[in-house]
Every structure is written in C-alpha cells, then in structure tokens.
Length: 206
Ligand SMILES: [Zn+2]
Image 1 (cartoon, protein in one colour):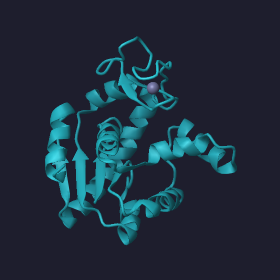
Image 2 (cartoon, helix red, strand yellow):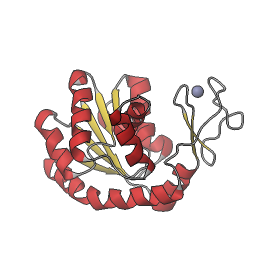
Image 3 (cartoon, protein in one colour):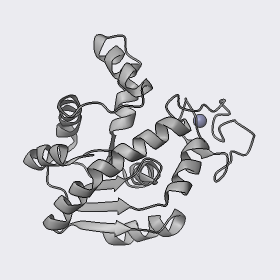
C-alpha cells in the first residue's frame, strides 16, 4: 500500500512516517531528507539544492519529480509512506501517473504549536532520532538517548524560514486537498501524539 501524509512542516508527518518505517518496515520517502542527503555530496546538484534550502525556498517541481520518481519506482512493491511529497497539484498529477495512492492523511495542527515544535527540534546526526526541547527531551541534555552523540539543530529551522515555509505550504495545500478529496481516499486528522498514531494504525489495519 502507498500512504501519503499531508500537513504543514512540523505537523508530525516525519514522526508518523518514521514510526511506520521502524515498526512496520515501510519505505519512507521524505523529500526534505532526500534533499539534505544530496547536499552532502560533492556535485553541482548538491550546491544547487543547498543554496535553495539555505534561502528557505523550495526545490522546483521538475527536479523534485525526477528525484522522487527515481527513488520511488524501485520500492513500489513494498509498503510506502510519502512524507513531504507531493506538495502541490502539479506534483500530485505527476505522481498519479505512475503510483496509486491508497490513503491520504492530512495532519492538521495549529500554527503556534507547529512553530514551537520546529524551533525546539533537535536531531541526532548519527541515528536521525528526533527530539524536542519542549515536548520530547533527551534523557541527558542535548545528547542522543541511543548513542550519546551531541544533538544538532537544522540550519533551516529558524522562525523566519518556518514562517516562509508555512506561507508556501498554505498556498499550495488547498488544491491538493481538493484533488484527493475528489479521489475519495482523503482523511483529515486532528489528533496528536499517541492518539494520532493509534488512529492511523486502526485505519491501516496494522
Ligand atoms: Zn543517535
């Protein structure tokens, strides 16, 4: 099955997708993560993407579509969870040509909570575990629970870039919601935390 997660940055898409990946072996395709991986390479593409991300902008559709398709097409036999893609109607139409979506979950969270979630987010650079200085503190201050590595904050997680990203998100999300509502596999979700995970498990019959 293919599960698609819609929701603003900080709405919990990554948490749900990581959960499905770890507990149920889903292939987790996150465009944000994919782009960050590419920026670590030494190539013109890496430089290009780094510049876009550091400016708080989004990678264009043509490039995003190409990178997603090449990563996704090999994994279609597995259960897949899409996180951060498609983010607009053009990408949704492109995806629709080669991939059938079984479930669309739209995670709706209030904006002030989203900002706090993103500002407080810390990540382990070794195992990618995600923490939050407000909501999910590590046992030892600023160190990973699993490997004790020092946690980092993403360069693009500042209040200014978050507000920019939220604006961009709103602009493109409405047509996307309409697109999937029409297809009949859309579900709006307003729960958070454990209740959110339980609801999704119930719908997916996991
Ligand atoms: Zn770690």
